[in-house]
Image (cartoon, rainbow, N blue to C red; front, top):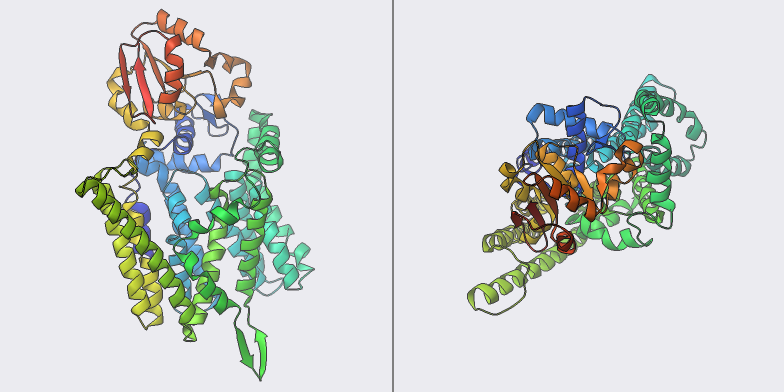
Length: 553
């Protein structure tokens, strides 16, 4: 079942959606330029130095492009495979806890695979799923080392694996590779009263991680001496601690916005907590029965979550490393509470999920009926009717599965039915993206429409929101940026790159000097502000009022 879910949800629909800006276009274009230039050490975007991340994530995408071509499937495949491998690690570590139980391990993998954020990020071309995979490998290997005989070959083997995964995580996204494991492992060992192991078990994985990360780290320093200064101070210290941090949010941001990312399983958290912390009676004495794996996962979930909350810069994707311990804890808790015949908390959670999703289904049907069949003028997000009908079908099936889970009396069936409930709507999400989302996030559709209007001799000008997509689709790394360079501003600081950022007067002059060869790609909003300073176009097309323009002069 787990393998079928991976294939159906994470592999088959990868190429269904167009590329989104800016993230997908960025993490696709840097690998494409690596392949084109043959420079696998120093990341570049639009031919400019791009030092926001190390190289391993780009290497993974570049390898996929070389195998499957420069297409949407190839650029998203590393993320999907990362989710699949993370699910496999979850299977292994959960199986080590309950060897006689045939359901906890696959249930943990099912919870992980069908959680909303895991799916949303795992089918996009970003680095977060790859980082979460390596961090999961780091944590799982250390846990297996912690339950091995101290000083044994098995312990050392798992500690080395933990270090290898940690080094790979560092090469993917930097110093978070060390912060997340330390924040989780140290409290775990303290709660287990294994104070000496904090230092005894640390040196081998740290040394191994250093050896894994060292070759590229030295090469990039020799090639680009400014890399580490920029990467450490700008991408880490300022992003997480500075008052002007990028994506600045309040401390409570994740507490308020993260729960929907755990759908639909968030409804079963009370039931799982009941199972994890229920009292058992042995020799007439009640005691807490918390397994070492549960204690480890509690530390693995809570302390990184608090760390991400304390940092000033926040995006919902940052908490992705918290989903593996969440899945394991939920699996252990649900299995225990249902095995003991305590269905009430599970039933209440499932009924709540049924009512909320059922209310959403009824609301959508009512709005569709009022607007499309009875002629009422009710504002709805712009969308084609078939997309709304597919969404209704997905929600309807979801509610049916929830109801079946409530009615079932078998433990394994109840869990399986609840877990499979969101599968159809998740799959359909790839095909029913709102029209407004495609209009505002997918300029490649517009670029493809005007492929014949761009030749190798064309001079391309671009706004900061579209430069990555223009580079990717037209296979160029010499695009001029207009007014603002955005995330490429640092690359322009090098002497030979400063002329790539132009003011409107300079753009107008170059257009006049090269009639018939100049192309401008930008957001509609930017073009509306710029057009009075530019010559009259010979061709003008757009993807919608919230989208992008293609202008030829």
